[in-house]
Length: 407
Image (cartoon, rainbow, N blue to C red; front, side, top):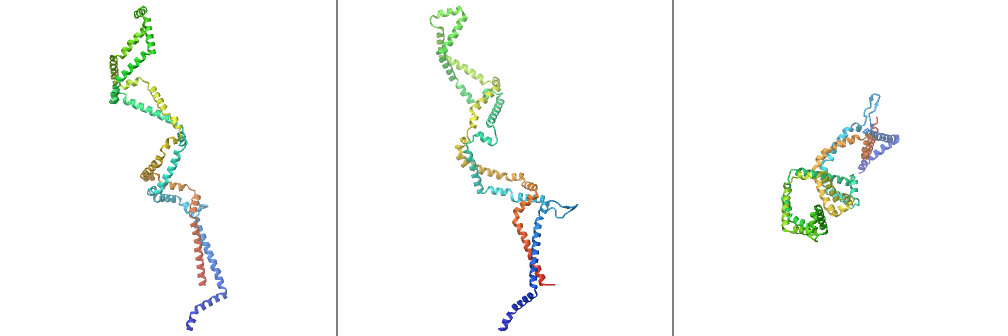
């Protein structure tokens, strides 16, 4: 038992003996400072090396020369490879990041649908309830003098329609160009027109205006006949001749035969009108005069200025619920579906890779350096500290080797 305890205590006593041996010679203290010194030197070398390597990614920005001799490693790696970097970044963005598939995936997200729909509804609702006039709205979207432009467009439309209609019907007759139903209906109105004309004639000659007109015509007739006119007046006696004429005229107008006669006359004239060519009709009028009257009539009926001076809400507010609740969701769904169809072609024509490449190539080296450092500052700092740590550990390891195996 005593031998066993004695054997177990041997390593401890041996270690204590070695420590005291080193302390006695002052060697342990020197080795400790050597280890610390080499550890610090190693850390400084490792940290500085990594820091310099990081700086050499960007610095110097330009080529440096000593005389005609170019200093190696100038410019830095990124300035030297900026064109290739820009090309590769553009390619990555185009082929891996901003692809038609990723955009379609984003467009199909329900959250995106809801956000866009809410955004559009808020904007449209604000516009619907706006107090600005239609004219002011057009001015906001850079369409000044909207009223004048609308009138010009209407006038151009009238000119175009008139000329197209005229060119189409110019060689046709009235009968060929108008629908049969219209012609039959107008022909059936001839008896009504005859009755109307005769009735108005009776009313006219029964009134004072007709009496005065007949009297004036009679007096002129008798005056032109001289003595013969006087003889006629004597034969008629005290009854004024105009009254007798008026009476006979009214009898004539109310006679059934007169109506039949007028019907025949109007029918004959209507048949002649049916055979008219529109070329003959147009020749009776001045195109410019017709167009001016038509334009004046249409513009007057529309009253463009009154329409444009009303607020937008006057036209849109009655449809607010339908626009907000129905129209906008439909537009969103159909619009997104249309966009998804054309996204691949659009992306192809947009050439994202070229846009990214050109944009990066326009960056100054200082700006590019600042962008990279802003993104990777913590990581680059950790790389520098890691270099210092590894350098320190390597320095300590070297010191331990030197002290353990002195020459």
